[in-house]
Length: 177
Image (cartoon, rainbow, N blue to C red; front, side, top):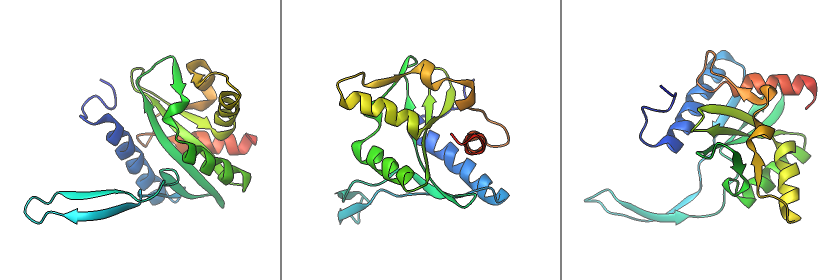
C-alpha cells in the first residue's frame, strides 16, 4: 500500500503529510516552519449554506517558509503522476521568482516533489530547478527528467516523520550544495 493510497484528495494529503512532518520537526526543535496561506479576498458568505464566494487577491510566495540552523528556508510541495519527468509547468512563475530571490539573498530554497505513481519523494534543490528553468527560457525542454531528480542524494525517505525532507536538507547544507 502506498503512503497516500487511502486518501481521496492526494494533492491536499501531500500537504497534510508535510504539515504533520513540520509539526514533529518543531516539537523536536529542529526547524521552525509555517505554511503560508494564499491571500483570498472574500466577496460574499451565504449565511444559510455557508458557501463563500471570493478570489485570490494576489499571487502568493511558496507554501512553506521558516528557519533552519539560523538560515531562512523556503519550499513548495509538488506532486506529479508522470513517472518519467517533472514538468516545469507545475511551478508557477511567481514561485520560481520568489525562490530565485530567496536563494540570492542567502536562503535555502527547494521543492519537495512527489512522484505519485512511483510513491517516491525527492528534494529538488533550487540550483537544479534553475538550470532547467533557464534552459526552458532559451527554448529548451520544459521538464526535468526523472533521472536528474531521482538521485540517491535527493531521495526523501520516511523515517520518524512522514516526509523526512530535513534529513536531505541537512546533508546538502553540510556539503555546501
